[in-house]
Length: 504
Image (cartoon, rainbow, N blue to C red; front, side, top):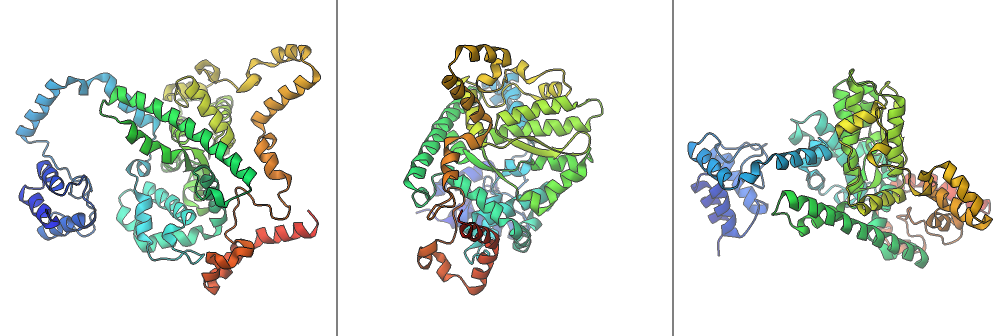
């Protein structure tokens, strides 16, 4: 049976080339350099002077990150590349290049998102450390997400200091800074868990469980439609694309941890000293702002990113007169999509575009897919600038208010004359429900008896399990950990006890 040592010897014997990489991985029936193989490759590379201890090994090539495996000046390699282009000229088609450029524009320019993998490196960096609850810090989702946000912002400001920022001591410093905001992070984690079927049978009443099951099933079906459209579009560009790979990419992103203040766009704005850049600095440096998340649908979160970049770029450009009405038009779009974006205004103040509502996000994505289009379809950089300058309205690009509201007040008045009082109340109720989440049935069910005995909050599951406390992890916590837990939830418990005493 081939050994790792044999693969390492083969890799260096063949000169650490592409052929050497393929041969070594094929010998072990692997696709990437990971685990013990990666450690031995790096150790040999350091010994031979190819790498330093601080360098990171590329899992794809076996070389240090940033080092090219091919010599692009080699005449033989150039000849092979030219022959390949003649055999497959389609790789140079303008359509293919335009599609790649569009994809890059759609997904924004935040390199910490493109590279990925930082969350796993954080978990490795804090291995063995304890959270404020006395549990493993690496398995505390809320804490890891808070640290990740701090790290991503720091990497955007200091792209050349990745190794330093990922050191355990630095990650633990971030962990201390996010402690005051863990309750908010916990709340977001519970909401995301609601949509991901995690621990579903342990939360809520049977009626709540059935409601949750319907919500999750609806979103799963919607994501399958989105994945089908993604597959169709990607297959047209890349014939090797597979449905399975797109499913593996997008299903985990159906509901994501999303910053209402886009990190990449705001860091770029802060560094460029644009209008209100001090507010961008606050959004990307202060732990309170960096721990603010919304549970957004992945397709909408990513699709909105380039619009945020476009707004801030336009506000920095003296040749683009951004109007208040134009900004309000974008805000209408975000409100229709159930999303919010926080950033400096073109005049240097603070502004929040849109309004958060995940129900509207689902409706917005459903409507887009029903038309066979991606969310925020048709809005490239030029059209966003047109809207901001008030040269165009959203209606020009096919975006109207949802439901019957979009047909206008005159037509609605004519309908009112033909409808009975009961029908009119039903109609107005359906319209109102679209803009006020408190009118939705699931909110009414939630709000009905939320202070009654035994009621369980669907989005606010307590880590203390009441009468079953002795069966939970709480009994095994240290005295200090118990005290930290009581402090974290002291205000909430005091409010609940006061409410009970008042007979609420």
